[in-house]
Image 1 (tube, helix red, strand yellow):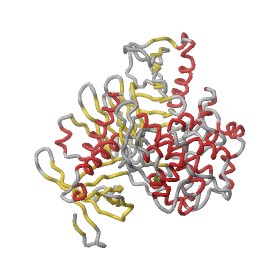
Image 2 (cartoon, rainbow, N blue to C red; image 1 turned 135 degrees about the vertical axis):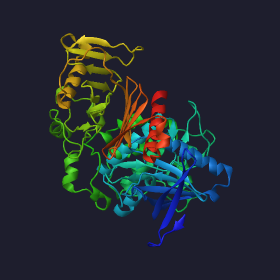
Image 3 (cartoon, rainbow, N blue to C red; image 1 turned 30 degrees about the horizontal axis):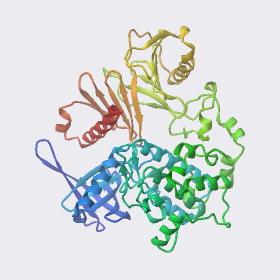
Image 4 (cartoon, rainbow, N blue to C red; image 1 turned 60 degrees about the horizontal axis):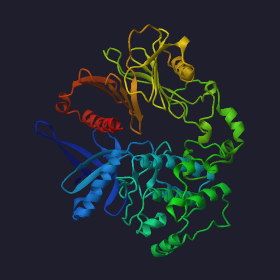
Length: 541
């Protein structure tokens, strides 16, 4: 680490050891401080080569002298690197020098909800619904992975430049190793800590995150956490006594009160489950926006804006559901603004309009198969796609797959079948139980504008796919893997001939597996490491 002459900036050097033993350097400029914790400070960090800005968590090695402290940091890194969700602050990169460890994270330019609450005093119910729906999605994802965050609070809920909620700081996160395991570590933030953590005799588990969810909901609507006191000891006493109330001076709906009261139960088993939370009337009484206007960082939403979402639900449903019509990604917000219970009720011939078509940037001269176009409609049915060989297919949310060959033939793979042999039928002889899926496939086909031509034999198809806040990953049945990063970088890993196609800045290059490390292309190496991590998780599942 050294000072530059310009404005007394701090320059950080990363040493990179190449395969042949040569050492190269990468330089970063440390910017303003974003926050600090017990053992770390967070700064803006700019990569001097590509000018990409991250949030860098910098930990002094001298603070890790105790074995337990180092072990906690390693656990944080391992857990955070393993999660990939649009609602989690992305773990980007890790390196160290002689003095510090540097964890590079996604920069959330609009700060955290604690800062916003201090500016605003409290949030409207619509704002709380919007943020809590996003937080619910993250908690459900983490619990599916058997991860308990244990430090969900307003200051760990960040907003990116698109006003999307991101959960960060996995310093207290833990993994549940077996069903029924109870943790006994005393940890957390005083205002948000669950009573079973304070009384560690029976241990704690997933329910502590649900408790924190209730605290966050209360704080958003009232302006302060429910058990806040003059010091931590008094706060702990109020938590153990479940001593809180809703102030008469604040207007809060009966649905909000019931949701919070049903979560803030001293007995963990008496709290609402995640499924009960999302079915609660608080989340199903009006439309909920996907994100909020940037202006709400400083001022409440306008009365006109609130009226749009808080009006008659039946009237809004009629306005929202119009025949399928593709839009471009840049021109429209494609997520549905409907209560979650309503999403599954719309009929096929009136599917929601706010979807968009994505197109791969890979060049057509490639003699292989990749996903050329796709429609991510997983909120309702699944993924529709066109392969580069002209085949259109759908990967449904129930994990079944269907492929349309345009010679009036359809391949269908049931989610429960144990072989790779498809059920084959003509569109005129479609089994009645598959007619709905065929109709959805034909919708996708219409809007993907697929050229019709005869295909002989069995076609490859999308066998698995996942989407996170970094990329979409498609694994094809012919062992090809196509990764589309949201910054327009693409990878095609060809399973048969072991070639890797790398697309960056509209420039396409082909490597063999042995050439990747030798290439010195750090961007390619980083993307391949990310891909390996994701594919390992997909294979395990």
